[in-house]
Length: 298
Length: 271
Image 1 (cartoon, chains in turn red, blue):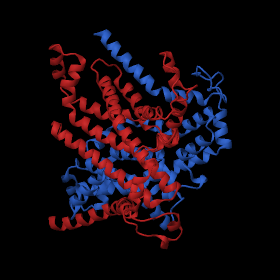
Image 2: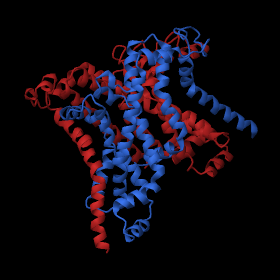
Image 3: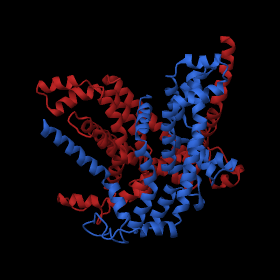
Image 4: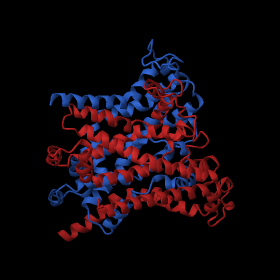
């Protein structure tokens, strides 16, 4: 009975998983692998018209990218987003989580959902909104700053302010997601521990550093890894808010890949960019895991 | 004690207000007359609220068409994703077949590979099949949802084997077991998954931007991005466009937030 049942079970298992696995193989694994192959070809608009124009060119796409200043500009910008943006978003979401987790807070679910709301909004729509919020003369951001005596900042017109401007938007849009993850972790920190530290006279910051942070270290790592990957994948933000400008100060790696592939139809070179992006995400993740292991977080 | 309670709650209220201020401002400006928002200091409320911007969007910019496109693509993406993902997730949790665990490990490892890596070859692949510039092309990536399989599998693991075994002894086929016994238990995770896919496909920008070149097929985000490049000065009109684009998913989320947040936590502990 059991043996016959197992054969039947196995057949059902294969049939139920086959459609999804076929789709994943065809539309996820095959393109990802083909990306590597494509990056060794000179696939361009001529090959798009007639495939016989396609040639294998070895590492030529990579060599050309290394010599392309715009590629380096995009790499530098994306790394800046990662290096500046990750601590910014992680800190923002941790502080929000600590506030919402506070023992003293009334109507917690209300505040939690309000802080999370930007995350589910449509990226393009809110990017359009922020483009106007950041307007030099009529924007609310500069109006708020003017109340504190800070002069009007040319957020979207100056190459030094454009990256912080987009980070401001990205932080606003995404901190709710990490906040929810932090909230779940904070709820596992025993309240007695915090109380004991408080009775010993430890201040807010001391308790954050020596009680809360060590207890949620694995979550901090998880959130940082997720945020790094997200920072490497910025595309719609510069596309809508700054169109990569001014002076290419907000061209990200993905934005560069999009233009290379679908504006200039250099698909071979675009695939090389995609592959480099993947290696970057992988490398940074491994470095984070390495330091976390050495620091004893996991 | 009471002072502390009020202070913390006030702080949270202030942060929350600051967070949703851009959304409130978007809504407010969408009711303003043309050019009204371009003043200093920026007005917070419309002097004479009106629906002119919305009327113009639907009458002259064909936003009704884009709204219908978005609804169609997101609904179909959701249905197809559920159809592909639920049986697979259940099979990976409860049905033993050769290679199952190895395949599942491979899928979990693939979760770290961002979808954009294969975007250019996927475009060429769909061009070869003839799906470029079609609704079907926009739907394709949603069929290959590894995360959904993972979500359903985690949930299925808690179903007791005895329950399935009892149904087998009663003579139920494997398909019947999935439909009559497993599916009802899965209702919460099905809602969560449907919500994820609907919101994800509604908000998606890069893939529809690449695959849809005919303006008649544009989804709302693609259309809005194109409009905002052409009509940079029309502040009030663009805010109305943003409201039309984002309000449906915001309302959907608010109505079903419990399902969304629980799914988000299941997903984040995958590492």
